[in-house]
Length: 564
Image (cartoon, rainbow, N blue to C red; front, side, top):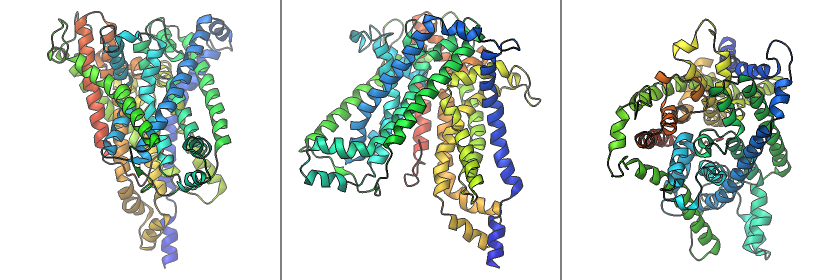
């Protein structure tokens, strides 16, 4: 009796699993693979015949190679400084305990979820001649862009490396110290070697984010400093040169893919089996008698205050400086207008409502697609072929992380000019939410998947023995356990959609502009009132995003971990 019920309860429901695989694959094929493939075709086959002159034309321009050099330089510098600053913070926040450690951990996470446009505006205000750091001369400079990229990405290093550092068995370091090795040698020969895979993994992700940074470079780079990403946007929106933009998109894919392959090989060369221990209890109290702790504490305070608190505080303070130089809420009052000389088609509050509405739809789409992918990938089939297929599906849905949002938006621009499956996305209002969902789906998968994988299969077997069918097993076992992670994924998806700028800047119409698009337009218009409105709108967007993430962070289950 029990065996038959077990077989029946665990027996796959063919129709359900077929739908669970087919729906995400169709979404990925239509809204990611097709637009990206269309870009490739546009570059190689512009008029129905193979033509490589576009490549030779673009690749023969000195400007193209200058942009490639700037892209790689800013990505390499941003990655190097993020790692250098992230390591002492990871040590402080994951290997030492002190009052307020949880608050500082949350503060370090905030920059990662802030919209790129907000970060760009915050640093632009800081580096302006009248700003707090104006004397450094970093306005419209490569150094200014790198500082902003480090602000964004240092939390990636802290979370990735800190998660492993927290679980390293301290006995290996203690054994090396007892054999006479000094603290520096212990760190170099034991700790750093153990952390190498996590450092390499974090560095590769940060390099990817820095190489595809768009909003920050667009706001801070001015006319002197651009990247392949900003050049694609410029070629498309200002010169309508779609062919050159297509070639640059392909070149960007090649450059990023090559960098990631090199990084993956370096990471595999450092990977080794480690003896890990439970995270709880590995952290020792911070002591001022230890030079290592004092150095880490001072470095951590300088990084958090100087790199994270100062730009955001400067942005908030500057938003209350009115066009005549006085202090007051005038910039916030002006958010109900269309700006100086009607710089906008809609008011900032109308754009805020559009952002919230679009983010809600994008979140719903990404949750449905991402949850189905996570559900399928979490299963452990017995056959080798099925396991490989599940692994392949997991890899497929990580591809959007490796392709910039600008490329996705540009791909939408040239492919969605006709109805898809009978629906005209341009007039339905779904074009922007769908593009944002493509960006958010990998985050949903990586948030929900670890929890589903952590469920003991015996729970499902017990439910099946007690007579539950496959659907009821999902409702009574998987869903209750994964509910908190689904809530966290909802927050991630909503925050990412609220701040998404790369794809949206291509697709949003003037009367349907979102908040990040409106902020960028206000910055680009002359007039002190427009600039003040941009600062106030950036504060509003930052507050919305941070509020969403703070609520979502309350749902994080530390026991289940996460892959982001």
